Image (tube, rainbow, N blue to C red; front, top):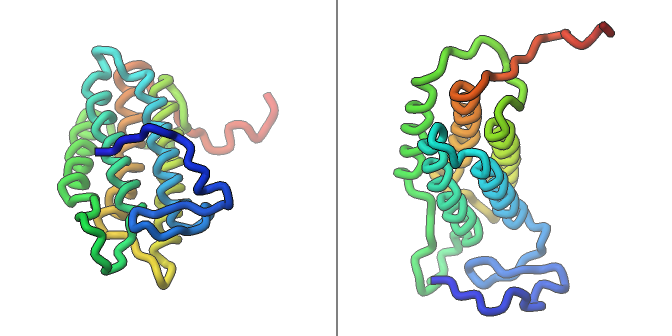
Amino acid sequence: MVVLSKIYTRTGDAGDTALGTGDRVSKDHARIEAYGTVDEANACVGLARQHTGTDALSKLDQMLARIQNDLFDLGADLCTPETGKDLGYAPLRIAPEQVERLEQEIDDLNGELEPLRSFVLPGGHAAAAALHLARTVARRAERRMVTLGAAASDEVSADAARYINRLSDFLFVASRWVNAQDGEDVLWVPGKTRNPS
């Protein structure tokens, strides 16, 4: 259990921070960039949830609540690199079941939608627009995780990589599902705005 009795510690004033292993790294280290961007994605999901509390969207709101918890798990996973040294505890890692649940929820939501016949512009219902924002931040988190995993001294677990990849798919489908419940997707019309009207 985490107990935070004091929020500031002054230990990071010189621009470094502690990992779950106790090792200190620069605050712009690829690992900090990765889990910091996961945190941003989580904040965007929280913003989307401000619009999913209605009865019509409660099914999705419950999924998003679980995802927010998963994203803290993912942050904990990324915060504690595999070093081989005994930490005195088992680090929290993303489990295959978390990825599988996301896949099932994607299939569940997508099964209620018409096939996509155009690219979709971010927008429509307020929840859908916020989910698109969360999707783009999740994709950035994935890019940061790929950068981290490409470093010779760092790695990202396969389940963590699968989870963040699947999450952006979920958020895309979820945004379409919201628009199907209340309104419709905003479709891209290629070249529509090239000529002044």
